[in-house]
Image 1 (spheres, rainbow, N blue to C red):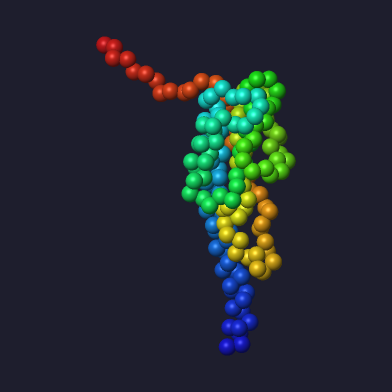
Image 2: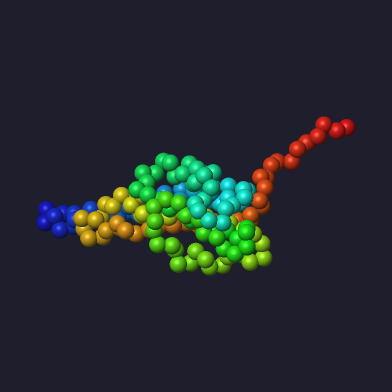
Length: 161
């Protein structure tokens, strides 16, 4: 009985940690899909040089994230379609990731969409009472695509002989 009393708290902490990290890594692909969807839409439309990202980009990102209980997300859209790098943001304000501007293409037009949100939007804060608090930590994902500046449609088949 004494062994059970001594080991039960350790087993409980281990179980909560496993559940928390499982939920975090199970939901990260949704964040990646949201970034990819926003970049795909942004790569096919004309982009402004200032303000916030176009509504279609925001809708594409939010559609991918709609099943998550979001405490707040931020969308950062970088592009160089009008000369120079332009940054457009929408949503809650978080610190810009330090390597967001690293490795940007220089030989062609590009769009980069970063989606940021609190880690607590992807997983519950199960270990907070034990001193392992994830509040205030930000998770983000970026996708960079080539900008086409025109919608890409499937090829049209003509009814020739």
